[in-house]
Length: 212
Image (cartoon, rainbow, N blue to C red; front, side):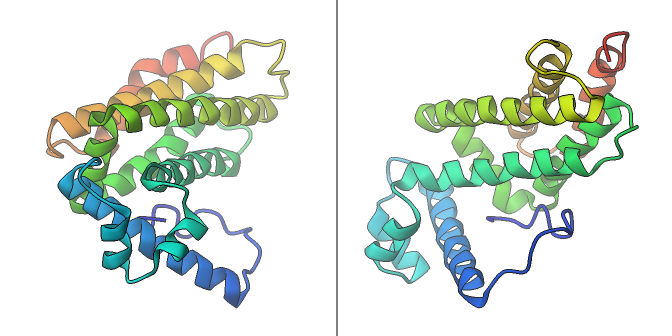
């Protein structure tokens, strides 16, 4: 991934082969090069030839991992969503929903702050480029489905009949989106982890209310 948000967060991953490690390394180097260029020059100004030249790989290698420039950013978003779901799944099942969901969102958001110089330009790129913003919203819809299922599992509820799991997932992701927007608009001056705590202080009563 573009920045190491989840190092050590999930300890149950199976051992990967040397070939898989090599593929992950190439993918990470491509992602790094592409996101840095896109953030610095703007989405429309960067060509795939520039990306592969910066990464030191061929066009053929690029298209082995990504179908387009857009897909590089989409993969970045996919990894972030997978991390949020994994963090929620790792929380104790008896933890209050507001606490478990706050932690699941807090981990990637705090990592954004820890890697501010590299990540803030990418967040701005996503929020300010209409095509990427649309893909971000598409990804959030998938995150919502994944989080809904995980919330339902934790609480022993049926996500098809019970509205609470989807509403809880939606509130958590709305908080995540609001934090990223505020952090971007502040030019990184505000601490995203503290913003997350403030956002969840607002929604915690609803998450932990009678419907929880």
